[in-house]
Image (cartoon, rainbow, N blue to C red; front, side):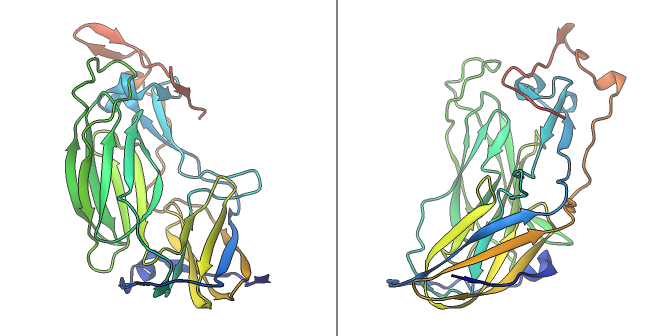
Length: 305
């Protein structure tokens, strides 16, 4: 068991987007090594983003997950009591041969006006399935992300299942999957997907070049196994950090390399946080539809501000 010191270069995402080699050859791996460790967030996590449901379509249905004061929260930093950061993608670069790199198209699910999973790893030129489980219509917008510009990858309506007979009900029936292809350009590797109707519905993804990657669990832990012996670059990425951490990883046969990544200064650099500001015209019980007063109630989940 060997440990490698962390090299936190503060590399901007633009360096991460340098055009990778997508070629990878599958071959048997015997006596492979492993990389195991933890991704940690140092310091306090940024507060959740807040969205006033009065300003979005279907506020009553989406408000079933809310604060009870017409606000919907989006917490993109899931951190354990010891600082473990969930939903970070850890990946080995420069691995050109190894274990099978095949997978079925990943699925993103819209449920309760939430997109899941919030973070995912994908392959370039791979199909992605997006399924609507809500009795309301969503609007899928997917962008490939760069520091100074973002370009649309696809934009499609996500229709609800016709068997949803009551848009006010809390049913979850799968609609017809929306299938499209992930195709990055200009060497980009990060995508951002949201609902154009409901900005708080978000998923982020990163393209991997080989099967040697993992997404951290609720404790910030990860394991990557069956790695051919060699020297590689190990990268940790989280969409809220605005950059990556990397280190050299020396992987030996039948050995486990223990590592630890530490992200500092947890500032969400992608956009300013929206804070909850009470306004008399956008408060609880102020939504009228043809003279009928509509209240937004967190009947499914009460979020704590």
